[in-house]
Image (cartoon, each protein chain N blue to C red):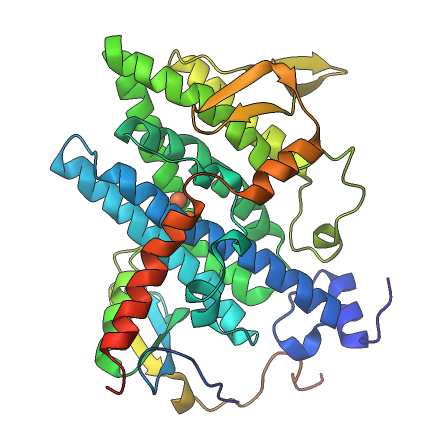
Length: 314
Length: 77
Ligand SMILES: [Fe+2]
Ligand SMILES: [Fe+2]
């Protein structure tokens, strides 16, 4: 694919990093900005999403860990938004003046995390999804500043998911009520993370992000990678997940035990595995956003506008 | 080229953050922050880039850096 920018073509062909706007084509810049926005929005929204549940921590130490993770997520958001700023966007407008519905984070965060158990399952599953998505970008990304910025992010996502796994194991071993609570959190959060990776490859014909090396793996490849990390671990600690491994032609494939996609009731946090739906239905649910969307965005947008008012003219 | 950054504080600038993990290592750029003054920039840098126990961390206003050449402007061999 030849462009009107020979420097860009040369760098892409050589597998080199792009470092400046001058080296980009307008299409590349647009795709890069979109990818960064999804990443920044996802990191940012995980802070209020985790904060509600962190307040239910069973001890001061657990609470401090929860807060440390939230601080990390804000730093990750800063990295993505600051790059957008360097690419000409207005960071303050992006964060504080955008309509809640236009934020580009995964639907999963719109379903409230209400208990400590749900928070640590989010660490084990959502942060694992973040680890896979960003790990792929970290490895493949053709934009130098972002690739380097992700060094820190990868280190910390690893810590988040390890915290999630340690707690899952502890709760499973404790048995009784805490085991049951863990299982019911996994029951609704596992399929929600499966959806996170988006349309199956069979429906998504072509990805500009892959062409531009803004990512390296397809949606299905990422979903498979995530399952290969999550399913064996959950089974090992005695938690049931609706997926299993099959070997065909010497190739390991992770297969879901339910129709994908299917219907989800966000208020009841319940999947109906007997009610398959279409991706159009899923898209409708995603676009309408979930229960906590407006509330979470307001949480920081309101604070900001109050702060600015009180500092007017200062 | 210096950009204008929109913040609650009227005048802010970019500070580049440099750090190293161990004594034998050179300082390297690990990120950047935007702040109205060096004190706040230091606080932001400390809170944002806490992924390691650095032996050294420094911030420099980006405008104080003189570029000799940038990627794409390498001297031909
Ligand atoms: Fe993160
Ligand atoms: Fe995380």
